[in-house]
Amino acid sequence: MFTRGTLIYIGQRLVLIVLAVLGVSSLVFLGIHRLPGDALFSEHLHGDQYQQTLHHYGLDRPLWVQYVNFLAGMIHGDLGESLVNRGVPITPIVLREMSVSAEIGLVALIFTVGIGMTFGVVAAIRQNTWMDYVLSTTSVIGYSMPNFVIATFLILVFGIWLDNFTQGTFYFQIGWPGRYGSIGAIWLPAFALGFPYASIVARLTRASMLEVIRQDYIRTARAKGLREAVIMVRHGLRNALIPVITILGPLVIGIITGGVVIENIFGIPGLGKEFANSILNRDYNIVIGVFTGYAALVGLANLGVDLLYVVIDPRIRY
Amino acid sequence: MAATAAAVVTRPIAPEQASLWSDAWRRLRRNRLALAGVIYLTLVVIVALVSAVWTPYSTFQVGVGIPYAAPNAHHLLGVDGLGRDTLSRLMAGAQISLIVGIGTQILVLAVGVPIGLAAGYFRGAFDQVVTFLINLFYGIPDLLVALILVFLLGPSLTNIIIAIAVTRWMDMARLVRGQTLSLREREFIEAARAAGAKPAKILFGHILPNALGPIIVQATFGVPAAILFEAFLSFLGLGVPPPTPTWGGMAAEGIVTIRISPAMVIAPSIALSLTLMAFNFLGDGLRDALDPRGRR
Image (tube, rainbow over all chains, first blue to last red; front, side):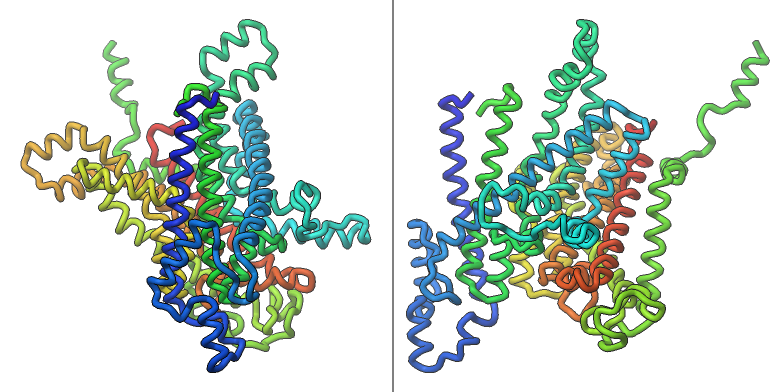
C-alpha cells in the first residue's frame, strides 16, 4: 500500500508542513507586535526591574533581531517562555495541549463519520419514506445549529436536567479528567463538535448512495442472490464513500477550529482553551505558540486524510 | 384526424409565458419548508427594523429588572446578569446578525463575481493565480484567518464583516469561475463575440445573467455561514464589542450562568438556530427551484 512513491510524497508533505508552520508563526509574530498592551503592564514594574524583565525576553532589542532569534528558536523546536508564568517553557505546554485537542477531534470525527454515514445510508435505502424525511430534516437542523448551541443544550440536558431529575444519580462530569482515552468524559463535547458536520456527511452519503444503488453492479449483486445487507455495505457503501472522503479535509479543519469554542465551554485544557486564556492574559508568546500548534495540527491532519484516500480507494496513488 | 389536431392545439404542452423566474417562483412556493423559511425571515427582518426604533426596554440600560430573573410577565425572556431585558437585546441582536450576514455576502459578491468571471473567461495566467489563491484559502482554517484579521484591524462591525468576507470570497469565485468556463463555450457567447461585443459586455450582459441562478443559491447559503461565523467570533469575545447585543455574545454571557438562568443562553441560541435553519431551508428551496437538472 505504501510504496516508495508514497514515502517520498509523505516526505514532501512534511517539508511543506514545516514551511507552512514557519509561515503562520512568522505572520502571527510580526502581526502581534502591532497589538496594544502587554503582559507586564499589570505587574507595575518600574525602572530597572522593568528593563531587566524586557531584557530577559529580549524585548529591548530591535524587532528584526527578535525575529531572527524567534526563527532560530523555532528551528530548534523552542517556542520561548511564557510572559505571565516566568520561566515556563511553551513548547511542552503546546505539545501536551495539541494531543488533548487531537484526541477530542478524533472522537468527534468518529461521531461525525459514524452518525453521518448511518443517517445517509438509511435515508438512501428508505428513500421518500417518512424515515428519509425525518433524517433529512434532522440533517438540515444539525448543520443549522452552531456547535456551541448544541453544547449548551447537551449541558442543560446531561449536566443539569438529568442530574436534577434523577436526584444526582446520573451526573455528567463536565471537564477533563486528565487521562487519555477517557471516552466517558469526552463523548459529550466530541458529539457537540462532530454533529454539525455529521449532517453534511449524511447529506453527501445519501446523495452518493442513491446514485450508487441504481448502478448495474448492484443489480448484478442482487441477481447473484447476495443478501441485501451485504450488497448495501460491500458494494453500495464502499463506492458511495468515495465522494464522502473528498470532504474529509475541510471537515477535519472545521472540527479543529470548532474545538476552540467547545474546549472553552467544557473546560478541556486543549489548544483552544489556551488560545482564549493567552489572549485574555496578553501572553503573546503563548499566542504565537498556539497558532504554531494549530498550523501543525491542521497540516498533519490534512496529511492523514490524504493518506486515508489511498487506503479507501485503491485507484489513488501518490 | 382534424379533431385530434385541434385538441393538440388547444392543449398547450408548456404553461404559457413561463419565464425562468416565474417558473422558479412557482416551484419555490410549492416547497413548504422554503416557504416557512421565507415567512420566518420576513418576521426577523420586521423585528430587526422595529427594534431600531422601539424595544420593550432600552437595549443598553442596566437594572431594568432583577439580575438573572427568570422569564415573567414583565420580562418575557427574563433578565441578564446586568439587569438588562433579554427580549429587547434579542430583538436588537437580529440587526447585527442580518447586517453581518447580508453585508458579508455583498462584499463576497462584489469580490468573488468579477474575479470568477475574469478568471473563467480570460483563462491563462490570471486564472492560474486565482485558482492558486482559492486553493490556498481553502487550505488555511478560516477561523484562524478571521481571528488574525480581527486582531490586526481591531474588533468592530465593519472589520468583522471584512474578516468574514476574506474567508468566504473563494466559494463565490470558484462557483462563478466554473459557470463561466462552461458558458463561454456556448453558441450564444460565440455569436455575441462575432457580433463584436466587448469582453465587459459579454461578461456582464451575457454570461452573468445566465449564471445568476447558482449565484443566488450560493449567496443564500453564504448568509447563514456568515451569521454563524459572527456568532462564533462573538462567542469567543472577539466579535462586535459589547455593549452592542449580538446573539453569539449573549449566548457566551449566558452559558457561564447556565445553572441559575438558562433562559439567558436558550433564547439567543434558539433565535440563532432558527434563523440559520430558515436560510438553509430557503437555500435548499431556491436550489431546487432554480436548478433545472434537479427538477422532479
